[in-house]
Amino acid sequence: MRKEYDFSDSKKNPYARLLKKQVTIRLGVEVIGYFKEMSRRMGIPYQNLINLYLKDCADAKKKPQIHWAH
Image 1 (cartoon, rainbow, N blue to C red):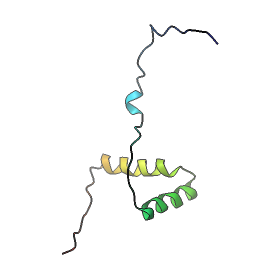
Image 2 (cartoon, one colour; image 1 turned 90 degrees about the vertical axis):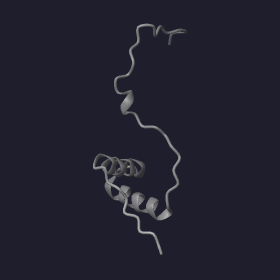
Image 3 (cartoon, helix red, strand yellow; image 1 turned 45 degrees about the vertical axis):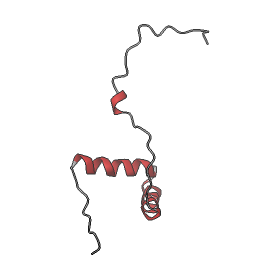
């Protein structure tokens, strides 16, 4: 391993805009349980499933249906 590396000719990662960003979000235990169970059956990490679902909603411009109690 070198003591120093020269990055003066390096280029920006063209895929950087596609990277994920870590955020803190509070989800209900039933929501987490739902995605964890689905992830167990599908063999995909539950965080990835939540991201896929939210991306699908964003791509389709879905809006939540909220019913307020009177």
